[in-house]
Structures are given as structure tokens and as C-alpha cells.
Length: 107
Ligand code: FES
Image (cartoon, rainbow, N blue to C red; front, side, top):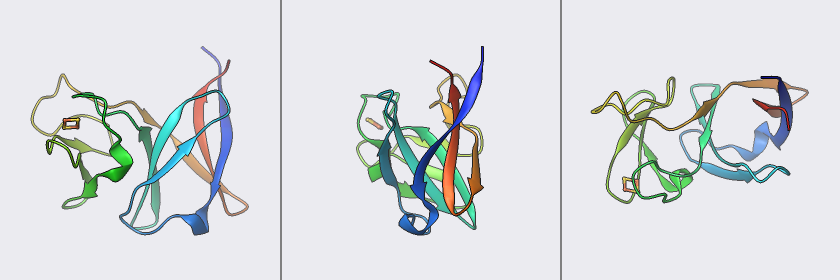
């Protein structure tokens, strides 16, 4: 599968340890987080009941806690911290000219 980096928001729109929602032109909905200078991007839909993950909180280190039923995901891998077979899709990011780019499959 081919991938491409898609430009998303300006880095200045991110607040340390707070989620930001961003929808790509292809309809993909992302939750973006800035933690200790690193930007993480995951699908915005929680694998539990599909609630928006950008509303979640960051617990210790890189753990995202869904605000609805407190499922927890390691943002470095997307994998649940209590059930390794459950995960949220994670996307690689890179910063270029002050903007966040997210690596997604080419459409
Ligand atoms: S919807 Fe996220 S934990 Fe239930």
C-alpha cells in the first residue's frame, strides 16, 4: 500500500497534553496530541463505543484515557494498556515548516 504525508494543523494550534480534533479532506478523523514536544495522531474514534478520543485526557507519560469509560491507550503504539488485542489506529507524524503532517494510506 502506498502512503503519503498529509498536511494538518499548525503546530501552534496544539496545546501540550490536550487533544485536538482534525478531519482530513478524505474524511479521516484524527485526534492529535502534543506530549513533551512529540505529536501523536490516532483515529478519533474510540474502539470501545466510538466516542471521540480527542476529548480524552493524558495520564502518566503517553497514556490517553478515553473520557467516556476510561479505556486507556498507549499513544506510542495505539495499543490498549489493559488488553493488547485492542488498539486505536495510530499514524506517524512529522513536523515541517511549523505544520504537522500525518502519514496515511494514499487514496
Ligand atoms: S467509548 Fe471510549 S472507553 Fe467507551
